[in-house]
Image 1 (cartoon, rainbow, N blue to C red):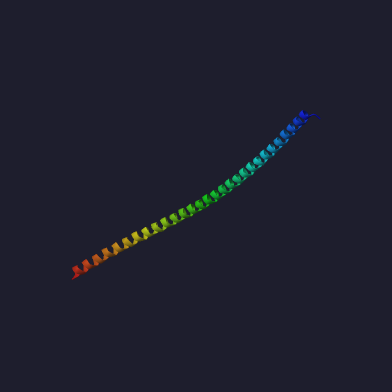
Image 2 (image 1 turned 60 degrees about the vertical axis):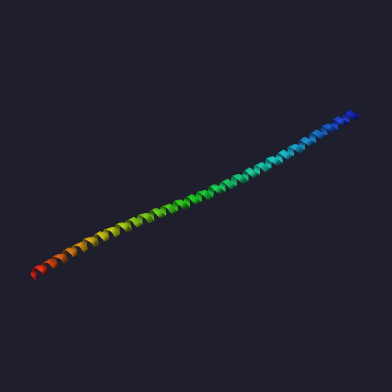
Length: 108
């Protein structure tokens, strides 16, 4: 084999091996990017799951608070009704007492 042929052969061998190494590096970079994107996707999915749980918990708390507000409104209405009833009874008793006093004064 002549020297120029040997140089050309070595040059071709060098090009082929360097391209093989570049492809290997590219494949490794693609695999690394793929695994990173998978990790980011998993993290994103976990975050979404946590957000959903928080929202569900808040909805339950809101529902419970609404029920408590309803219960307190009922209790308040009952208290108002009792208060009105007591006020009517007290005013009736006051009127009766005044009438009795007037009768006693008139009888004297």
